[in-house]
Image (cartoon, rainbow, N blue to C red; front, side):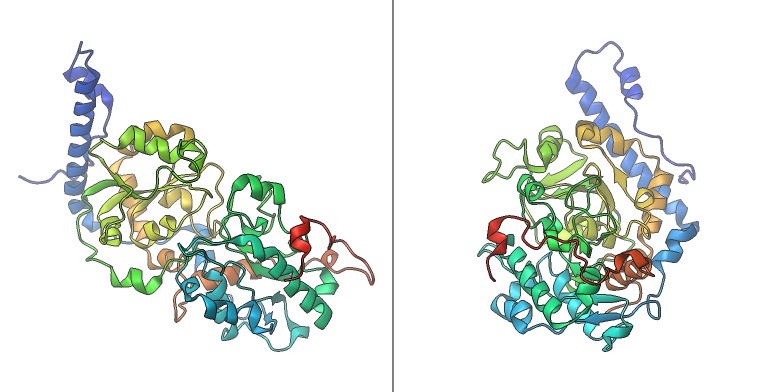
Length: 442
């Protein structure tokens, strides 16, 4: 029997109402919806076989595709300050776990710039100045970052460069950039309330911050900051690739915490209740493969899934977003007002699905109502190698990878306006502002 070339029907509760007309049994209705959802998946797979006449990948159209493929070499020059090793290498020697942590972008960006063709050894010709500080490499025995020393380390480094070179004082950091991949960037705290209370470290408020945290209208995101993906181990992910024609037999996939039992056992504060809502609404739904267990087949399972949930946790971002894109699983982004990595180059609206936190209870209806041809197009865009490269920090580096996307973001901010250069003796930043603990020597 030939497979139809038209997309399968969209899941809708109207058919179940017709089949069970007059029934008041909600469990019967749920079973019908689940069965209809499974049929939707099966028909979708069958239909996708006939869609092979379409290209397996699709280039991003318009300016976004051009931006994604930009080459920053020749468009900017970066001067890397040579700091004492206590700010970077010695910190890493004490705890090599920092190399594989999701905050490791600060380390690999430093290594990348040291051998990058955009580096200049002549600070007089530099467009940007970079201060290599490993401010997140302070981990607990269980691997959680401790940001409490970070403000003092940053202040110490800036005091050093401002007294040893003239370039910071010309602009008070407006032509400098810092990589700050903490949960809430340069607010340097892992709890949002405390991060908001602290605000961005005062002496960094004129600098360009390269950070994983991004949320609109939030005190921890400066205008002009560059939002980047968290670090995910490229070699490990590459080694776990499965054949690209493997059927995607899982409809919705998620592995992770739903409740932070130590810090928020009720689940109302952690992830603003969104993760708890996922669990309570869909833990028994056969369309949802969700669990707190983290299997050894985690990467392979993502490659067998159509949708991968990317809900907020304590912060709106997580490595799941990187993993979903790399493994071609459509990211379902549940984080209101999130600012996503390289949003001027990656068309997140086209490759992902956005679900408001308050709409989590309707997640099954939202996802099963997406037409198969829309799903297939998202998958083709995700299959584009340039999309995957942009989310990774590989060693050795590759054209268009996350390192190059950061440089592209810096290049697009050039030339610096004349207003960033201060008059002789002019001061804008308050060096004594902030909590008194931040002012202690490091």
